[in-house]
Length: 120
Image (cartoon, rainbow, N blue to C red):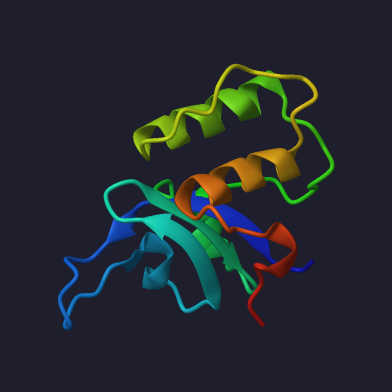
Protein backbone atom coordinates (compact mmCIF):
# COMPACT_ATOMS: atom_id res chain seq x y z
CA UNK A 1 0.00 0.00 0.00
CA UNK A 2 1.64 3.22 -1.15
CA UNK A 3 -0.89 5.56 0.38
CA UNK A 4 -1.74 6.47 3.92
CA UNK A 5 -4.72 6.85 6.26
CA UNK A 6 -5.55 10.17 7.91
CA UNK A 7 -8.08 11.56 10.36
CA UNK A 8 -9.45 15.05 9.73
CA UNK A 9 -12.60 17.13 10.05
CA UNK A 10 -15.33 17.74 7.50
CA UNK A 11 -15.60 21.09 5.73
CA UNK A 12 -18.40 22.60 3.65
CA UNK A 13 -22.00 23.51 4.35
CA UNK A 14 -23.70 20.83 2.28
CA UNK A 15 -24.77 23.16 -0.49
CA UNK A 16 -24.18 22.43 -4.16
CA UNK A 17 -21.51 25.15 -4.26
CA UNK A 18 -19.81 24.02 -1.03
CA UNK A 19 -20.50 20.28 -0.49
CA UNK A 20 -19.44 18.37 2.60
CA UNK A 21 -15.96 16.89 2.12
CA UNK A 22 -12.88 16.07 4.16
CA UNK A 23 -10.43 18.87 4.93
CA UNK A 24 -7.94 16.84 2.86
CA UNK A 25 -9.86 17.96 -0.23
CA UNK A 26 -7.86 21.20 0.02
CA UNK A 27 -4.92 19.25 -1.45
CA UNK A 28 -4.53 17.87 -5.00
CA UNK A 29 -4.66 14.21 -3.97
CA UNK A 30 -6.81 11.15 -4.64
CA UNK A 31 -8.87 10.19 -1.60
CA UNK A 32 -11.74 8.06 -0.32
CA UNK A 33 -13.41 8.57 3.06
CA UNK A 34 -15.68 7.17 5.72
CA UNK A 35 -17.21 10.11 7.56
CA UNK A 36 -20.08 11.67 9.44
CA UNK A 37 -20.92 15.35 9.19
CA UNK A 38 -20.35 17.04 12.52
CA UNK A 39 -17.88 14.38 13.62
CA UNK A 40 -15.01 13.87 11.21
CA UNK A 41 -13.50 11.60 8.61
CA UNK A 42 -11.17 8.68 8.12
CA UNK A 43 -9.51 9.28 4.77
CA UNK A 44 -7.25 7.08 2.67
CA UNK A 45 -5.03 9.02 0.26
CA UNK A 46 -3.24 7.09 -2.51
CA UNK A 47 -0.82 9.88 -3.40
CA UNK A 48 0.00 11.89 -0.25
CA UNK A 49 2.10 15.03 -0.46
CA UNK A 50 4.58 16.48 2.02
CA UNK A 51 2.39 19.60 2.34
CA UNK A 52 -0.62 17.49 3.31
CA UNK A 53 1.41 15.53 5.86
CA UNK A 54 2.77 18.75 7.40
CA UNK A 55 -0.70 20.25 7.94
CA UNK A 56 -1.47 20.22 11.67
CA UNK A 57 -5.22 19.99 10.97
CA UNK A 58 -4.65 16.49 9.56
CA UNK A 59 -3.65 13.54 11.73
CA UNK A 60 -1.32 11.15 9.92
CA UNK A 61 -2.02 7.55 10.95
CA UNK A 62 1.19 5.45 10.89
CA UNK A 63 1.54 3.24 7.80
CA UNK A 64 2.63 -0.07 9.37
CA UNK A 65 -0.81 -1.56 10.01
CA UNK A 66 0.46 -4.51 12.05
CA UNK A 67 2.45 -2.35 14.46
CA UNK A 68 1.06 -1.27 17.81
CA UNK A 69 0.91 2.31 19.04
CA UNK A 70 3.35 3.85 21.46
CA UNK A 71 1.66 5.59 24.39
CA UNK A 72 2.49 8.99 22.82
CA UNK A 73 1.06 8.00 19.42
CA UNK A 74 -2.08 6.62 21.06
CA UNK A 75 -2.63 9.76 23.13
CA UNK A 76 -2.29 11.94 20.03
CA UNK A 77 -4.75 9.79 18.07
CA UNK A 78 -7.17 9.51 21.00
CA UNK A 79 -7.22 13.30 21.41
CA UNK A 80 -7.91 13.76 17.69
CA UNK A 81 -10.69 11.17 17.77
CA UNK A 82 -12.29 12.73 20.84
CA UNK A 83 -12.33 16.06 18.99
CA UNK A 84 -14.14 14.23 16.16
CA UNK A 85 -16.79 12.86 18.52
CA UNK A 86 -15.40 9.34 18.96
CA UNK A 87 -14.51 7.55 22.18
CA UNK A 88 -11.41 5.46 21.47
CA UNK A 89 -10.98 3.87 24.89
CA UNK A 90 -7.87 3.39 26.97
CA UNK A 91 -4.37 2.64 25.71
CA UNK A 92 -3.91 -1.07 24.94
CA UNK A 93 -0.47 -2.42 24.04
CA UNK A 94 -2.10 -5.04 21.78
CA UNK A 95 -4.21 -2.56 19.78
CA UNK A 96 -2.68 -2.36 16.30
CA UNK A 97 -2.84 0.47 13.82
CA UNK A 98 -5.13 -1.74 11.71
CA UNK A 99 -7.43 -2.13 14.75
CA UNK A 100 -7.56 1.65 15.13
CA UNK A 101 -8.39 2.20 11.46
CA UNK A 102 -11.18 -0.39 11.63
CA UNK A 103 -12.52 1.23 14.83
CA UNK A 104 -12.60 4.68 13.22
CA UNK A 105 -14.00 3.45 9.91
CA UNK A 106 -16.84 1.44 11.46
CA UNK A 107 -17.69 4.30 13.82
CA UNK A 108 -18.38 6.44 10.75
CA UNK A 109 -19.77 3.68 8.51
CA UNK A 110 -20.89 0.34 10.01
CA UNK A 111 -20.06 -1.54 6.78
CA UNK A 112 -16.51 -0.14 6.54
CA UNK A 113 -14.05 -2.75 5.20
CA UNK A 114 -10.37 -1.85 5.40
CA UNK A 115 -9.55 -4.39 2.66
CA UNK A 116 -11.82 -2.59 0.19
CA UNK A 117 -11.11 1.04 1.08
CA UNK A 118 -8.61 2.26 -1.49
CA UNK A 119 -8.44 4.69 -4.35
CA UNK A 120 -6.05 4.67 -7.32
